[in-house]
Length: 360
Length: 115
View 1: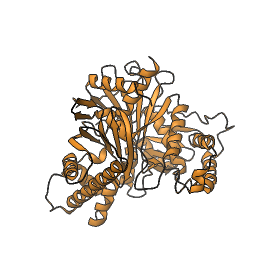
View 2: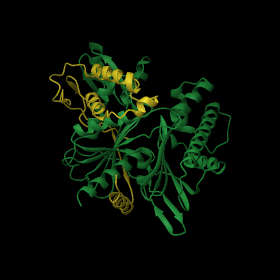
View 3: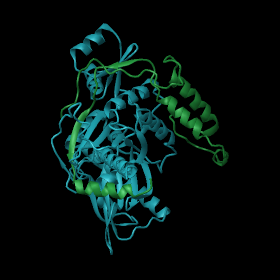
């Protein structure tokens, strides 16, 4: 892989359409919406937005505040909804109230009546219109968890209907498989290398998605709950430090390879990271053994997702793997070069394959 | 990382974009919740849209509920009333460079597979 992050740039409206190849990938996650398109030269353009809202009643003060700021908002009847990162900025500035999150544990949260409707409005603005008639679109969906009784079928149907109404030829794609398509794991056997063979793992905020695949075909997909949000909450509970501060520490200082236990927040985070990784490997081992999954040779595991961002995550994963009775030989655990964008890019690659197939 | 944001005159929604709904004043979410609760009584659809605890009689039922589930899913995405905003494009933008040959190989391989 030769992924290199190059400088972001704004896409000029009106000129972007003729640059992009047909086929769009959408990662509708618990924390962020990420939309990927690919240019003719191979560059991926990822547009991202945080899934957060903060409601404000229409009043003179609210109008004044919005006039004086650059907060992005949607106005619905007698309410303003500040959207995305601005919702967080405003709630921190005001010091009261809470942001609303329209997604919960990887799926839509229809208990929040108006916010799910607003989420669609926001997704529409981030995704944009199809560049060709019935342009293929793949949206990522989590697999059903092995440790909780949930079925995401309805979530999938709602999103499919929404994107179809926008004019896309929309299909779901498993989140773990999207990581496989983006990172292209390779298995090594007696007969040489097998492309797109191994395990794709997406460590998100709400859950971890796992996909086992052979030459691009999905053999087994599942998810495991208790992921990034769980780690933050537990570390916050045992240290008594607010979750927002724990997150800040995690993003700025956490090194899972360091054994320094003098900072209790970092120590707690490290302990819960290790517990979470061991839980993932425990469920992977059980699932693959139960299903009698077999792949000849040594496989590669590719890892993406926001929860995998701390330094040393893959090394810790490999150490835990070596201490387990994992049923496959693993020649490498590799971190995605773009952990935050792997799911959207992999979904985009799948959508481009749909377009190619349709136009043969 | 710079935000991609623009002030504009406002993005207007299509209002009610489902031709089966006569006007934008119907509370579609209320309707969806009522249907969801009704379905939940017989099929185990929980209030957060997850099918849970299907008992064996429900699993053995041969009735195909795809159509009603699809209608319910459609009702969830209807936009009520008018919405306006101060953005037309939304979100930050990040470009990543990948090995084009490898991506093309993946696309070729996937386009030969069944879905």
